[in-house]
Image 1: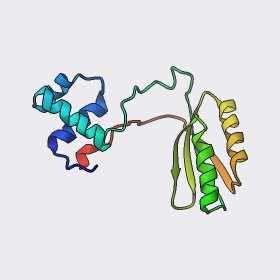
Image 2: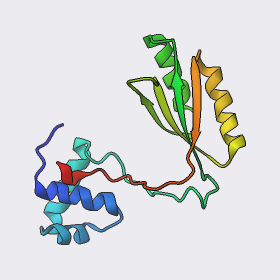
Image 3: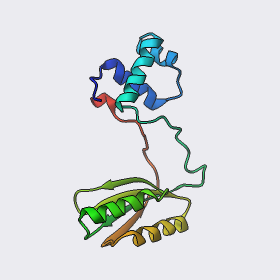
Length: 156
């Protein structure tokens, strides 16, 4: 369901991206409408799929998951069967937080979060068992300079 969003909808989405725990009354106050229409708008945004889910963002370092690895994968298997086998298997690896099919020199890019090098080695061994991979390259993040889950709604 594709709905036409207005300024108030974008404002609500921006607020929820920053803090989804705010009450409807707090959100309605910030956007300048009463609670009931605000609640209806939030429900409509959820039904339409603009709001996929509400989650808590955890601190990876405090949970001993402070190693982020970007994994570049090249394959010679450019066919639907290979892709489906690879996709299904990678989706089952919990350490893989993001998984993209790319254009350019790299076919797939993964963001992996683990506690240490040994944790990544276990993920690496899972990856090379899945399907024929031409090349796999791992880059370890040294420092996280910017991280956000908020989409840039001010550009719309």
